[in-house]
Length: 183
Image (tube, rainbow, N blue to C red; front, side, top):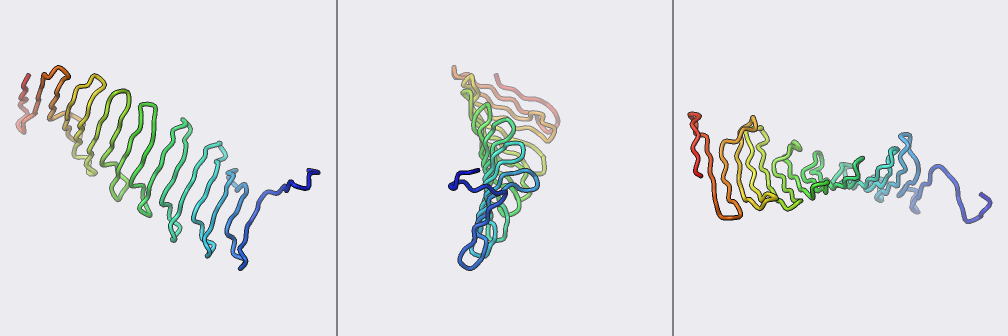
């Protein structure tokens, strides 16, 4: 505290020549350490913080104050980037224990397309927002290539597989409930 090069405070504000606060650094009421950057109108445009629990996050805002991008690391040390349309998260990129994934969502933030890779596998999953079914296409860790179509209950209705040795299989459930298969 005796060092003249050290300033101790709970909050710092940086103003431009017109008196508009352009940056703030401090600890808020929730215990977050926060650096906020504002535009010439004093509107928040970027926040970098560490939550009271020690989790880092970086958030970008549009001119109306809506979140447009959020980068964070969660409690399991999983990083993610979420991009917003002004109201809802529409694209999410993350790296989990199994590997990276990208999720694309509709205007209600319901996942509709998910791409994933890891442990020798890769998959794309298409989901209907009304939950009427899914379609997955991918390559498994055993190098089997396949496609599966499932109904709203998650029951497989169509499946096509191609094994690394060139053997193929096909299964379909007809509308009347009968099952057709090809070895």
